[in-house]
Length: 108
Image 1: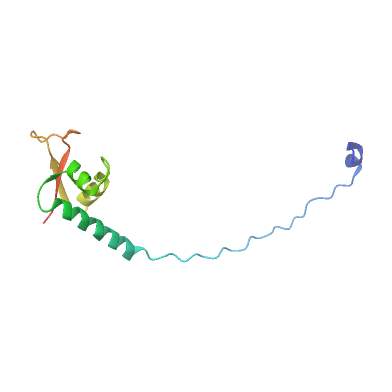
Image 2 (image 1 turned 180 degrees about the vertical axis):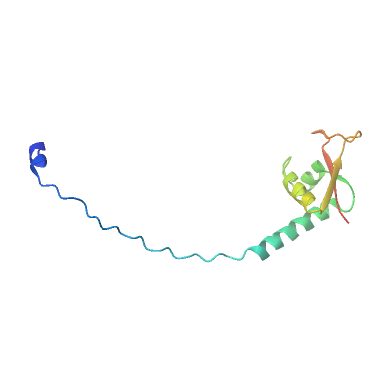
């Protein structure tokens, strides 16, 4: 077809029928609460085995668990908010410094 033939063709308007999409099936949500609780309990037991009941520096916890630097901090800070562990500065004057960082222990 050339341009002249296209311009000479009759144009019909588009259909005004709106096609309704089919409703999606609702996916059932899995109950992951028990699995999350089991993972949390396993992690706490693993950290408790490393820390015992004494004050332990962060780097010792990470090295005993085979974690990289700073990898244990998110769990420890989260557990501090849940009152599972307590922290204090490892420096003698009580101010936080990156080195020596924090020391941690489980609340009895």
